[in-house]
Length: 411
Ligand SMILES: *Cc1c(COP(=O)(O)O)cnc(C)c1O
Image 1: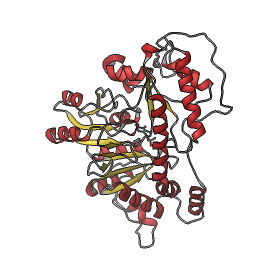
Image 2: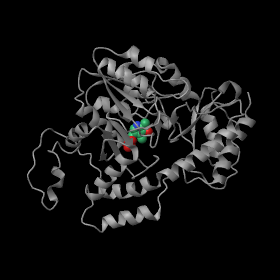
Image 3: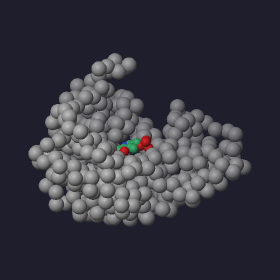
Image 4: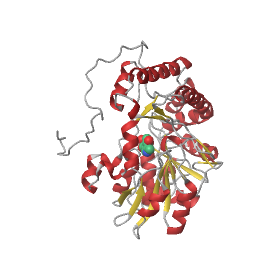
């Protein structure tokens, strides 16, 4: 099969082949969505307030949201943008990374983390992950460093912080920038310090499924001087604060210093973000409760590998990723997901490894087993619903469905 672009799409069959047995009937009467947003009257009122005001694009609420966010994670400064992808791209441009440069990152991520390296014309060098956390393996990073390496993009997979001490040491030793993709890692901590609290660039996502949402949105944290330059890059390359030119006392004059991008957040988005930020600690308490229920229910099963949680970290629990012990089951991961869907439980897979997507596979000649730990995890992983909208009954339904599928499909 070929797409309109003339590229072969990724194909990977269920490892057990076709299973023609009928799926079990649903117990739950309604479908449990994998990750619906949790929007309250507060967000609605705040958005309406913005719509009735004189500012609907980047204005006072965007400024306040960035300030509140910086205070929340303890960041030196924060720049509100319209996506995490924009934050990562802005960071690479601001760092001056371009053609001839290499950026080391992981295939166990959403393609955006790697696409941005292509956007600046640099070469993404993917390396394998650690088997427990599925975060980038510092030892593999070290082996991949060449004279052309300029940066490392670490992804805090599922909300579990990557091994920052080791990555920082490598960055320091080899003069590399460390950029963090924290799309999953709000709020998370590594050795007591919040992700985003440092001087290096860290990009957060407020996409609809993330722990905090503005519909679409993102935040870039980092040092004050770095973000001053990133601000220019992210808005047409216009000299600092040119966006205030419609303010009283603002001037119509501005200089374009470089061909920048159009990545600013709007006050409509920031209105939601302000309310969501105030609720975030409550959201996280609920996420942790659900994780405790899942861990207690699944810990005894010999067929399920639970998500790792190392010491000295705080997990943001954006995702609850189970890995199936396929040698104990008569079905593969794909069929396992179909069985859960049929029981009205929404799931997902995070992620189809980036190197298996046609663009990266064909451009860099990657084979699926170039990254054996990533490939093995991908073949047996699924993400269960985990969000603060879930009731105890929802959680019990997920647990019952998962355990029933395990029980009824022994090898
Ligand atoms: C969601 C996500 C992104 C992209 O976030 P946007 O805000 O949609 O640009 C980047 N990296 C990871 C790991 C993600 O899960």
